[in-house]
Length: 197
Image 1 (tube, rainbow, N blue to C red):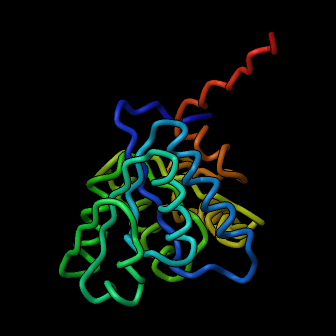
Image 2 (cartoon, helix red, strand yellow; image 1 turned 180 degrees about the vertical axis):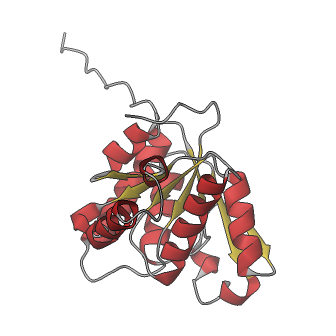
């Protein structure tokens, strides 16, 4: 079941500034970034120029998406923000980074990452649960990266720590196109080739 289509299509992508152990993560991020542009969506991200974050932003920019990055002063050099693309906002703290990203985004896609990615995922899901916003959240479960977390969320629901409705806040897709479909972003029209005269 897809989320309702938003008239505004600013997609916040929460992900890591490292590449991961295998090339699958960066390849998937590039495919997702390209898909955003091809489907007429814009990207909001953490303004890092490296790793999964750099791959998704560069591909989105190349495919015509408007790209907006938000980064705190303390991470400006560490996450290679000088290599980041799009309009970049430098803010004083991580709290302000997250708050601005959440405000600018109409929905969230979560790609592989580390502690920061998990922190952002749990925060946007919690804000949904508490009614601070009603913005879709989708895990992109490439190579079953998030499978242990999905099992943990299911267990928390089974043990009564949240309801099935609250569990459904976090959706799961196995590939970039499936994730974009869940957000209700229209697929691009197929390109037809003219027959030779």
